[in-house]
Image (cartoon, rainbow, N blue to C red):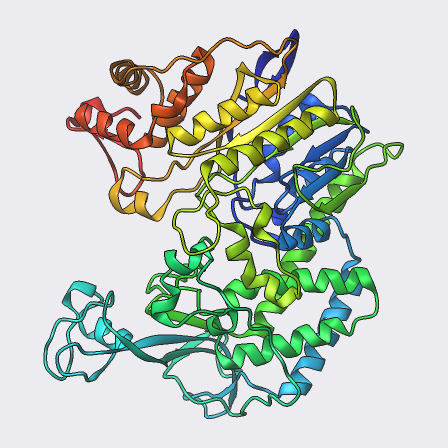
Length: 589
């Protein structure tokens, strides 16, 4: 922790926040760009008192509410995301573990009775009945030369697991997955659980012993239209993946539908809602988006609709049983933390579905705002949330989504100007409901100087002044796939937390645009005079300097910083992502 002055008050908030994403609450349910509890708690502790009210107008998965409740504060959360409200409300919907297990096992039994033992397979070792844990599936490609079927997995295996050496077994033509026409998909390997072995075992894929019964089952199938940004970004039209059901195997669609229907029959509202929380938490892994790897499963890419050439089909019922225990661990963590606060302190968390631009709260009613708004065009939440919201039966209205579209796919394009307007109006609402002298902390990250400049303008136009001594770097321990491949990422992997107060006067000093030479010199100074370990560290330090010195950040693009670093002779170790100089003795770490 570092002691920083905010306004005229010395307040202990961290200058650097490095957090793990492995605690029980974080692991209970995934959500795009979720901020870990340990990143939020220091700010709530420093800037509020027990019994205060915390607001998050872009609440997402509701982690601000969880942190507030554990610390004895109340929270009011707003978001337009149907999935976000579902997740955030259920994080603080603490259910007795025994009752939850009882209801979950009853739902599993009901679903199995309805569709049969659809994951039963024959064990090739003992000949007895075994249960499928997961199956590996491969796309089948048409050879561009002779048009023979090429099973991607088999071709990759024959090439010694080197994609560059893949060829057609029939004619020897080199096979490249990108651009080659897929003609189907087939299972190639099963992982089973059998009484004859103490461990899971791989075997040749075999047909299920029982065909799934689909009588009376109706699963959701929501279209992913051409107007969706992810339709183009993930090439869904070319692959025929234009609706949500197409991302699941038929067997898993059957299992998921039977399980969802069984959960829907649970009478207690809180238990039923919590079981749906468990259910939506397994959907990504239960789909074809869960990517296979020889070393270990690579999980589902949660920012796009990518299906790899080799993917998993997991046993839905087994996933549900395991996720149930993860959710109980999350409940136990939250329950234990709440139990440590004084009994005289009562808190509540309310998650409202609504726009950050229209907060139904009285003036001067909130003690603190902590929020993590969407980062421009980085992620399209409403597009990706379709995957879970289809099963919830209610979709987010993306007309209010604070994003910047990358492509014009029909309809009205959501521009940077529109994004700035939404952010400005949301911050103006925060200014209205904040008590005098209270603070707002905003999490933001982007590789575009234009977007950072937009944030500067939005905060100023809402009447806030960013405290130059309260700019915290947040490291959530994530690196982009591009970064691992190239060393120099195109996506910044660190966030800044900007803490601000309302200006006493509406007149603020004008911003000035730094020259390229000024930015280049600042880059040299940072990379040689600080503990900056990666290009992202350097970029975030530059943004911090710009905010402190009153720069207009519009020209401060990540690409220019990366080019400057290369000119200075820096590259990165692909394994660690850290800087390496040409000469080993000049390493910065």
